[in-house]
Length: 155
Ligand code: ADP
Image (cartoon, rainbow, N blue to C red):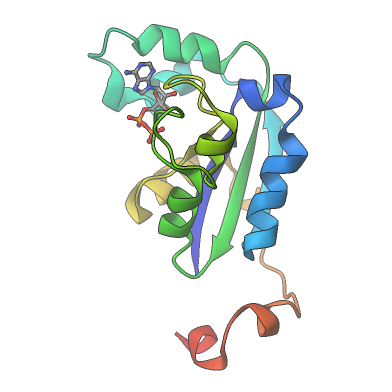
């Protein structure tokens, strides 16, 4: 099973969409391995968005991420990284297809509701950035037998 990071951005908190967004991941069949509310510092945001540091919007994006606390979540499942990215949709909410989270809830390239890790390697680095080991949980859920075929659970 893979694990991936999702951040419910300040826009989600401000617009009271927390429940709706979490509901999407739960209904899909992803399993919540960890979740907490945190107020992100400029330092951690500089690390998280290091790939954007040469972009003119770098500081603006970081500022938008600390207007209020965010909610960081770890979702688990088979191919969780790509499944979550597909549900998330394209960066620009105006271009993201309907049915995706950004397609349904965002009109902006910057204010695009959630962050989702873009690869397995990134997910591993990002989960370590936002969670301590004892904040991520392994637990059995009987639901797994309805979510996956036996052979998928063995893989
Ligand atoms: P994604 O979040 O889809 O993986 P990126 O890693 O390229 O996209 O960008 C990180 C975040 O920076 C985006 O989610 C968005 O909030 C913001 N961003 C990206 N491109 C732009 C842009 N051209 N103008 C303003 N904000 C942007």
